[in-house]
Image (cartoon, rainbow, N blue to C red; front, side, top):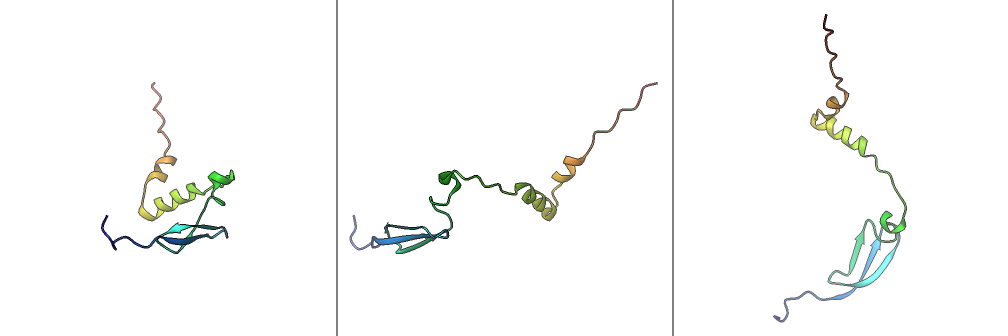
Length: 82
């Protein structure tokens, strides 16, 4: 390997928004994250419901999507044969 081209590997702390602090080593001394293993639903077993239906409707309204129109269209009735 070439000398003097690699970044310095040093002690680092990872701080989560939930307050969890993890000590490790990295090329960056301080790292801040939004979610960690202490608060992630996969690791905690806690289920959180996300309002995906509201997001889809908001997207359709904003960008003129006709997916909302397609959902509410009813099938036309067939004319009675006499």
